[in-house]
Length: 138
Image (tube, rainbow, N blue to C red; front, side, top):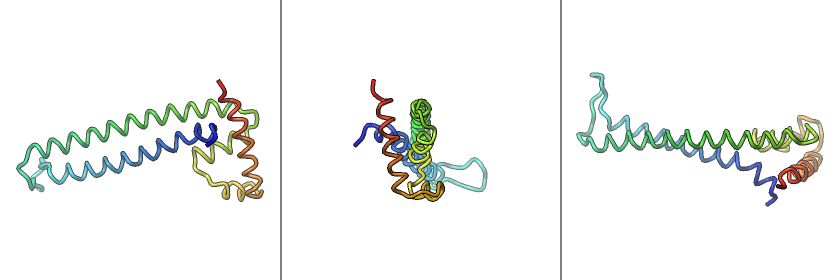
């Protein structure tokens, strides 16, 4: 896989991890609500197992901390990607890469929006990756 594609897809990989962590957080929250007694008179705990309540709350807090950690990493990667993209010569190439890899806009959508063929967008993408790879050389 091209180095430029690997560089650009790091944000998408972290997005997937964040989405997974958010689903885990929702499950932990649901579990904690089911087994933790409510302080109002409307709801009563269905368990007397205090350890289960504590464990559920701990798992929920861990899931929230994981989301915070991943979100921080995501912000750093997006800033790094944006900095490299902003140094590209052609702003249209910069926009193409940002739209495709950060905003997840398909080549078909870009082609329709710009009234060009998909092949034209593919060629521009390839040229943009070539330039990106020259910028990534240490």
